[in-house]
Amino acid sequence: MTQAALAAYGAVKVHSAIEGASPPQLISMLFDGVSSRLNESLTAIEAGEIAKKGELISQTISILEYLTAVLDEHKAPEVANNLQGLYRYMVKTLLNANINNDPTAIEEVISLMTEVRDAWTEMMRSEAAH
Image (spheres, one colour):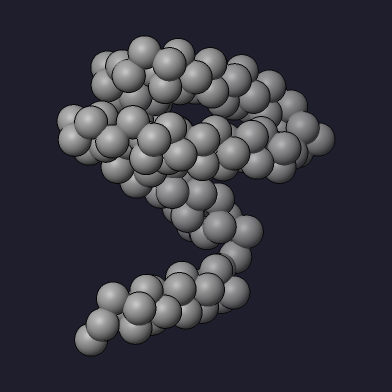
């Protein structure tokens, strides 16, 4: 299979996954997108691919801004407020990481996002059980 065919297949697969996903599943996919882009940005730093690293961090910041925008302040105001602060912190940390090519800062955001994703997954399991 050619690269173009593989890319087209991947795009269709992703589009199908998004179309069939519930809102909580979409949020999980966004969390995964943050983690995968940040891991790729670490690889880009190691390879000296500074432009690619910058693009990946920029995409990650866009996802974090979207996650901030969709917080439901009416359903759980305290949780939404805490997540908003955490996402802002992640964006600030990533901006500094981008400027300074700092893999440690990127790893910190990966760790924070892993905690958020794990808590989200547990909350979804708990709600499904009730």
